[in-house]
Amino acid sequence: MTHNLYLGDCAQFLERDADKEPPFDFTFLDPPFNQGKDYREHNDRLDNGEYWDWMREICRMTLERSSDGAAMYFMQREKNTEFLLQVLRESGWDFHNLIVWRKKTSAIPSQVRYGKAYQVIAYATKGRSPRVFNRLRIDPPLPSGYVPRERGMFVTDVWDDIRELTSGYYASDEALRDISGERVHKQQSPVALLLRMLLSSTNPGDCVFDPFSGTGTTLVVASQLARYGVGVEKDEVNFNCIQERLRHIRAADSTDRYRDEYAHTEALNQIWSTQNLVDEPVLMLLNGVS
Image 1 (cartoon, helix red, strand yellow):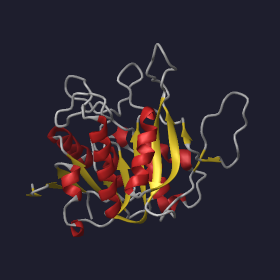
Image 2 (cartoon, rainbow, N blue to C red):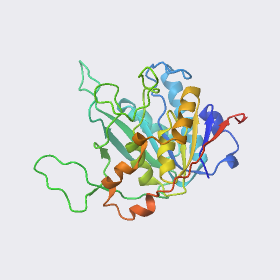
Image 3 (cartoon, rainbow, N blue to C red):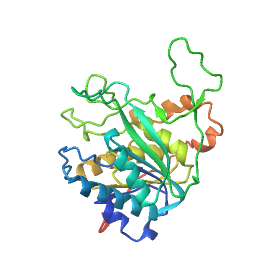
């Protein structure tokens, strides 16, 4: 078993015959946020209504292709929370949590309102009962004077222990960059973020779907946890980057460095498989095999 990576538009992919892939057990939906950014293969200046109609249709088609109880993690800007929850509800997903991912080093300043230092991630499932929900225990850094618990603490809906991939002074070597030092993709999600989602809502052998694959973090993490990945990316530069990243897992992409953080989680050895499924990703165009 290996990952399937498609070059093309995710809506076109989702309209294909569902028999070409197993049902999705997990989806990470991190689309362009319609902020007016300059993407090579996407218009990020859509009318607001057009944008959310698009998101609703992607959510609806993904639901149809998902297994019963499958998980959806949908990331958005905090200002779009109202639309995000409406789209999930109208497309048929059952909402569970609004996760607050608090950034550790960066915030968007403003002269007329408080600076914005977090993004939201809506966690929902197909049907009210999740097919998988592993209750993770972590041992996060505590404020001065607090005494750590002997067995750590359960993960809550506020994630303030995962560092973002910034562009400035605090940037780590995890962010993928081109030969000029610029990030290959401006909005790269960290390995630790996808690791938490996948450990919580999948088991080894499950099918993981990322319709806006970007630089492939979802598939990179899935490959190290023995999950089967299906990714779609329309930008050929990003597509080629994902290929290389899957073929050669960098030290900066290794999930092993985070294992001790989850040491108090029950049955950790069962949900955190060390078997790597991917020897060579299968690359496909949406009109045939590349």
